[in-house]
Length: 162
Image (cartoon, rainbow, N blue to C red; front, side, top):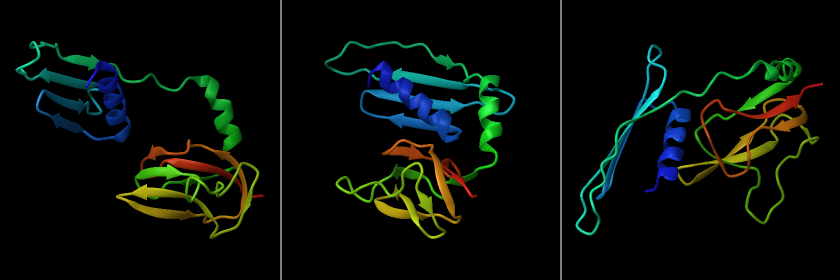
């Protein structure tokens, strides 16, 4: 596992909301603990296990600074988005815009949708769950890239109900 993989793992754990993750293989042991409300930050401990064919590496514990708050330049776009309805993920999984790789996407920006229309699928534990719209309107924005992991209650689409 190289440093870039470890950094990506730290970012993923921080976004997931998990308080602690431990990963242990034959040659490496990683513990990632996210901070509480009072201790804002993540602490990562990496222990390289000695291997017969590799020299032993000694890594110091790292502290990863939390991401800075969103800057105020994004506030005007949030005010403009307030008239739209946000469709959120009902489950954790992998977001797909198409029913299969060779099929067209369910909805595009500008598509008119009705309640009950399938907007996307989310794969969770090898099951593909169709996510249906609960509102009628027009798709204004797709907030997630295809084949991306999504969390529970994460915004997926913005819909203009008018």
